[in-house]
Length: 446
View 1 (tube, rainbow, N blue to C red):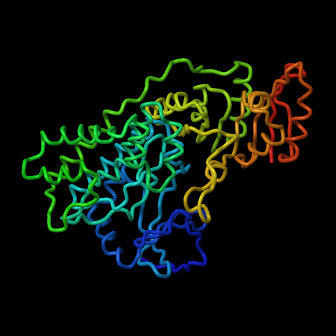
View 2: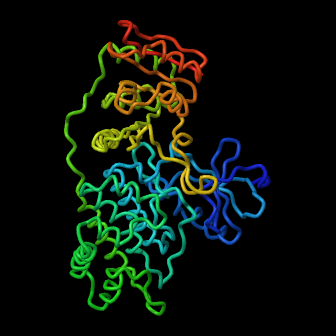
View 3: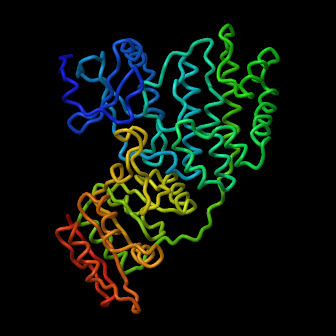
């Protein structure tokens, strides 16, 4: 293979990829790559050659990855990744998405344990959704399993997955979404307080411990006791049998599977206003956007936009509605990503250079933003101005915006006021539909 040398000055390193000594993620000429350290290059070469990584990719556990002929100064190997279209964070997922992500992590860990491998990172930020399926993206988190390793790490799994899921299932979504971005996840003390008492965490652990005790040999129960007591690691002189690891993993998976997803009411419409829907299908077919962000109307019709070849993202504060879309998207394997997001308060950039989180307005920029039945609630219930709403929508639009507006008769705001605000961010604004002076469907282009 003819090597092609590149220097760090030629690449753009990913803001989230800075702490792992085994590798670093970067962009080059629009492609996504991962550089592997000299020390870990033989290890990952073996995982490619023995079929481990290709098989995990084929089974949908790992993001697409392949070796390249690139050589980056200071590293021993460069991999090319198949980019996941949109990067979302756990605090933006509905409960059903979070639960699927947790089960995917456990299933991947089981496969790795059977091969003498494990994952050194537990947190859920390494999972992304591609075609409504969670996939693990941090390949350098894979490492050799040591006999004294405490994998699976029950304490960390509780903080990052089990505690959030249990609390969300009990109606604590709002608080959970505020706590999830914290690096430590949800602590046992947080869980106890939010779950109704100081002994709530103990009761949860007792149920795990009781369920696992029935299946684990007596000689291994000391390990189980330590796990259930949130001891972060087993004694250094104790080798953990593989069967014990599998039993522990199976018990944890049962706890995740037992978390109930609330029944979603069947109250969301499959269609929009027929006339508006007809106009939208026609114009979107003509524009042929690669990606579409939809906000506003709560309709299941958005999923049909994927049939036009577009990748679709949906923002809404209603987690039940997001869950309904997600379950449909998962069932049909659609290019649709529904997220719990308030357009007026999207996820901000956090940390130095966005190393904690990248702003939603950067991660979810789409060719077309479709904002139907959005303006009136924002203007007359949230009391925002035209220019504020237009500025927010323009941040997510790469090229086009479709927006409708029906001015109430008793207010002085008009479609002309909206058009003037739009022309500050879009070079062209034209009407797609005009039923009356107070009802407009506008197409805006940058």
